[in-house]
Image 1: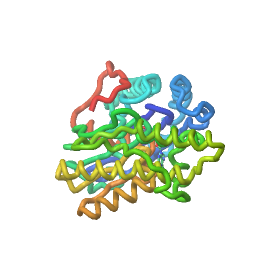
Image 2: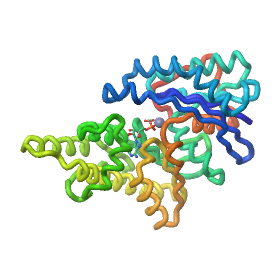
Image 3: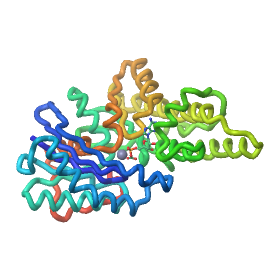
Image 4: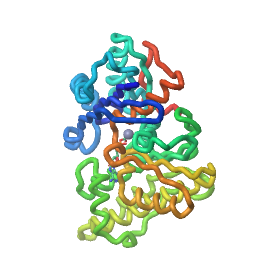
Length: 336
Ligand code: KG4
Ligand code: ZN
């Protein structure tokens, strides 16, 4: 069947047509309109500007996705839309558009959880991947570990108690002069630095817990940068980036490994925008290989926000019979 996916939870308007049948998955189109250039002027996402930009883009992006796929609405078996979590005004644009489209054309409507969608991105490229497995989602809004029991059932077994890993990267990147969102540039710059040059606290909370806290790490890095500046020196950007990245990577590897111990799983899915980080990909892969587990991580273009992952997640919700009615509403909160 063909699923039309729609995504508008943050600063990317996206529409995609995915063909899914008996374990076969094909992305027929995946159009992403990024608003980053607009938000960059403000150093972060401005919610009202995001909502307005989604309204302007969503019809055009949807028809572009259908046209690129070479299909019409009459061929679509389900409309899947991100309904939560995210920026409420941004979500409402996608949900309302999807509702109108689905009901005006008598197409089943499926509400999708954005975080589950990030994990579902792995199914697009690893058709052999089947639950149960353990998943870690690292993005601009989330840092959570899940025990994935089925295509639609997720149990949260660890999460951040404050900032998300992406927020932590973006904040320090901004103070070091990198444009928003700084995560990708931070990744590149870190290769030129000494990861042992700045001592920073670990964002992995100690003990048995699988939880993280990034605020102490972020504050320590900002204090270090301010201290260097107060002494009249220039902070060594690559040394700070390398040390900061090492602290985050070590914490993620440690908690992911503990999660595999806890769940007894030998399959780990890494997903979310921060899953594009080359150090996290490499070190998690290394950890998994060492313990005889397999790491499943989407290619970079499917790590960031996109509607193909929403269509994929929507397909499984559809198969599970989780259809939405005309009363579907968006929610800013995660309801996993
Ligand atoms: O999943 P995503 O596109 O949006 C949310 O759902 O939050 O994630 C965006 C986040 C941003 O914080 C961005 O800086 C980060 O992903 N990011 C990276 C890299 N590429 C994107 N962080 C670290 N290293 C990267 N290579
Ligand atoms: Zn996301």
